[in-house]
Image (tube, rainbow, N blue to C red):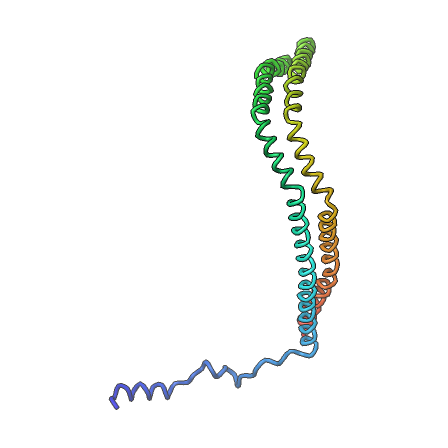
Length: 223
């Protein structure tokens, strides 16, 4: 064997491996958890298992409720909503040019009447503490606001008339949805079951919290 290798081996054989020999004596493994701590840990595990089990049961129920809502809505879509929505789209297309003209007429009123109202507000600020000027500015503001209201009456009435068919279509769709007893019952069941799920799991989480607190207390007490 080459002298260099032999010298390396001799050096390694003569080393003291401090990493496996603690200072001051032999190494002692930590003591196992006490019966109290083991019981606390078992209680926590049991509470977690119960939460998981209960949650799975309720999630299955809530999933079925959601499926029932989806089924009821699809049935309503086929029986009523498809026809109502087709009518809505047709009426919206027919009303669009009229509604555009109505909105344009309303905008024109604001363009005509708003400058006077803005001038009135400036006059009110400019009047300061002059009671006479302030009263006159406020009176003019009330007059100009009344003019705006009057000028808007006709175009707003026309807008209401021209949008009446679309408004009725939307109301019919809403009535079909709210009036469907199967869909309403399915939604109510989901709401009830969700509340029951939250109520049912509350004691489980309370028990888990208490078990975790007991473990912490016992550890601090050195049990």
